[in-house]
Length: 116
Image 1 (cartoon, helix red, strand yellow):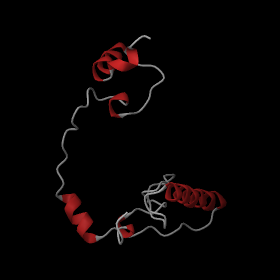
Image 2 (cartoon, rainbow, N blue to C red):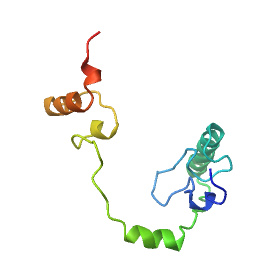
Image 3 (cartoon, rainbow, N blue to C red):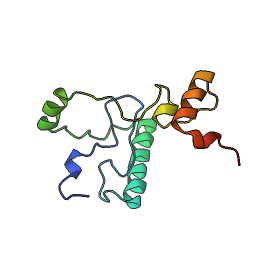
């Protein structure tokens, strides 16, 4: 991790009700490591526990103004190499898929359907 970048990492507490973030990419002292992922999870668990106990919320980090400004000018792009628009297309799993989704999956990842 690059020194001084923690100010850009989000806190575990969010303004969205019942939504807490965890991981090595969140604000904590062991940046970009397994230790950071564990600490991010511990800090997120503390947020959840505090909410469950009715304690006051942890402060939410302020977003730097230049980040807000650059986000307002952002133009999204279509992802490269993504076939379809379902959850599987973006890396999520599914317990059952439709025939259409199965055909898209066969095109994008035929190794899943190879027989040994």
